[in-house]
Image (cartoon, rainbow over all chains, first blue to last red):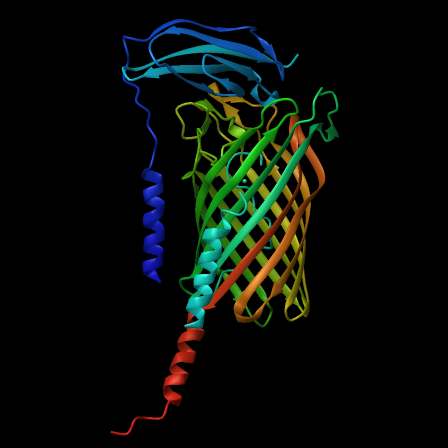
Length: 113
Length: 327
């Protein structure tokens, strides 16, 4: 039976060791022109449209928000937030292609009313 | 050999069953509310697979329905959990669990839904048989444990990160301490359970978030009308403190206090197979600020118990009963 537990612990350690890291080599070939939001601040449950303008070949747009919800893909996404996300939130857009990656952030304040 | 077949059947069910259903709406594994059990006896193994469907819906402000939202948002999840427990000694039981979200969805009419899925958290618990008196039918079993965020966090769809509420893993290490006390009277038993959980900061480059502390207190009434049928009625209070974010800012719309009623029916089949069905019905809800609240949950659990000591004893008895070969 100790063998079963040894295998379970080994499995747990292996899972803990697995983490996905994306390539974040800075690229000189990608130029960010602007990262803008249609409204700021934004009320709870209202929507802000966030647009990334950039120059580069075969760009892949990756979006993250530390609090709130993002919807869409590519250069334009919509951002909305519920009551638990009231405050100053950060939206990050990372552009990447075969030459590397470049990131920019926009801060959006979410207000109760 | 038949024991091996049964165990293989359980493993088969665990593996293929996980594809049949898929995972609501706080990140990480939900609390599986079936009746807590005392520590196992030495060399007893239990393996169980739980399927849970939960539905969250109405927004609340404090303990009242918040009706001013211009839309109706709902969240639901299909979740499975594998738990294996083993009585290492008569005073120590080692329990492990692994959660999997088949789907964890947030649906707003007119908007594409958010759907997370994948491996949730794993956990390791040490349960102690601190006091056991078979004459008085009284047991006291404290437990300590850790939940590991081994599963999927920072999940993306079309390279856009899903909101934290639908991420399958909690993303944070969590530490638990619980105590379970049970006292039997004839065909009935009364048990009490108390639990405290402390959560570390979420382990992510993108999130700075710490869940509030959680306290759970429960009282169970257990009744066994027939040998094979067990009924449990549970009243449980779950309290979670407010979360905190960057600069230790308190998230006002977080944390809650909910009282649940959880009825459970368990049927004991032959060869130590058990099937349980149970559900969570909120009797009272208080949510800080304005939050989406828990609606209901239903769950089914299949458990197999293997007593290695008994197997060994039977094997020995068989051996000693065999006629000796004449030379």
